[in-house]
Image 1: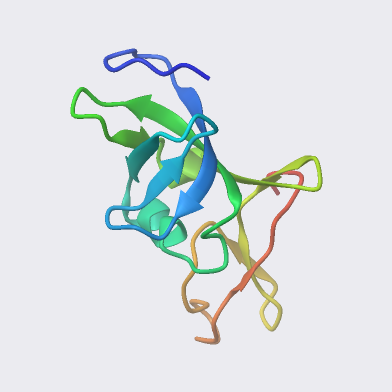
Image 2 (image 1 turned 135 degrees about the vertical axis):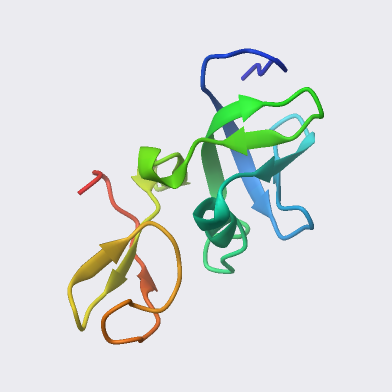
Length: 121
């Protein structure tokens, strides 16, 4: 994978998601790339249920060396597990509500569960 600062096209950053401040992805060649995004993306990047996983972020590398994830509504976050690329989503089993970021369900106020999916729906 090659990412260039200032490139206007979205690219993928893949590696192990680290519990650091700021959150970072450690690439296969050992580089640690800080990752940031909108508030919902930040919620996922700090979720202990995905930290340490093989992680992929779609976005752009800024000139300051920070990889900026695309907005959460563009579904830019994935976990790779068992040879599959899975969308990061969260599910409330009580209300049958899916979200893209960890939080309390807006309906019942219970914690949502991580629900990795092979499709966007």
